[in-house]
Amino acid sequence: MITSYLFRALDAKAVWTITILLLIAALVPIANLALADSNPFHIPDYVVSVFGKYLCYALLALALDLVWGYCGILSLGHGAFFALGGYAMGMYLMRQIGTRGVYGDPILPDFMVFLNWKELPWFWHGFDQFWFAAIMILLVPGLLALVFGWFAFRSRVTGVYLSIITQAMTYALLLAFFRNEMGFGGNNGLTDFKDILGFDIQASTTRAALFAASAIALALCFFLCSAIIRSKFGKVLVAVRDAESRSRFFGYRVENVKLFVFTFSAMMAGLAGALYVPQVGIINPGEFAPANSIEIVVWTAVGGRGTLVGPIIGAVLVNFGKSVFTAAFPEFWLFALGALFVAVTLLLPKGIVGTIGGWTFRRGGSASTESIGKTANEAAE
Image 1: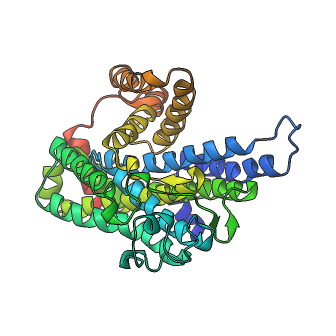
Image 2 (image 1 turned 45 degrees about the vertical axis):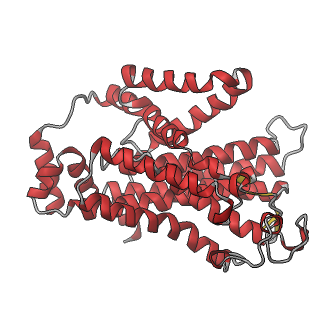
Image 3 (image 1 turned 180 degrees about the vertical axis):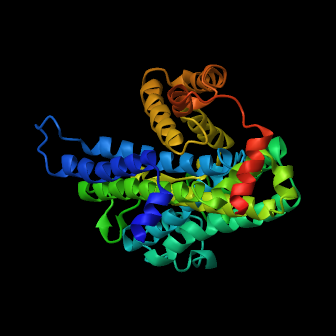
């Protein structure tokens, strides 16, 4: 029964992708920890951290692809969900510092002592427990997406207007988190972490474990997204994307479909942020910057939206290029990123994976009205 379900939930491409991610989760830590520095296959600690960060970005791009590639919701606010998940993890890590902080206060983080806070704010309580932080990592971004989406989708806000208000939401959070009165560290954010689950966050073994956790989380979320897309609900998603009005005519509650996938995607983005923070060692309001959300769109477009695999490849390639380019020409990176997006839009409108798939299967053009109706009818069966 389980084998039959897995066969229905995954195609060959998904099986290969998940297998590769799981192999990476196992082999990279082994190459980092078990092999001597002189061994040509040894992977240094800094490479593990950098590529662990790339995997978190890949998970974030996958989250956006689910709503943009399959439901037609171009969100420019996924950076906010990513940052909220990161702040939830950062709050847990700050509570683990205890008396090892600069001011030695067992309860208050250093920035609160510096700002003369007398007691811990109510919304910080519980973050000394990992299980509570883990719940908040998913709950806070998911709840924000649920409330935001409930109002937006019920009002039938679509297209560029929806994109603008998602970006406005992100910018509002940016301004709010910059304020010291919010209790999240102001413009400096949260940093100087010591431990995670009792393990030294700077230790090689901990960094290797965080890398493996990022790869496994990406594989798990890829499996869930693939299962959604290959289900009847996934056919409804595509029908909503291609012909929203006709989907309503067939009797589907389009706003509920959008709300579910938007909330689920936000929770994935929050998980990506939570895995990102201990690997980079800091979370600050800069993660809410609208430019960050736009970059996520670029990763997804470069890899190929509506493919699931494409955004993963796009996130890794673009961020690897960013690391190389900013080291050589830091002042020109944003121009290069803009040029890349324009070039992909004009020359590879389906992205890398979408274009290769088109060449392979000789597919092209947009779906006809009859195929859209067939998609909705299949979902109704």
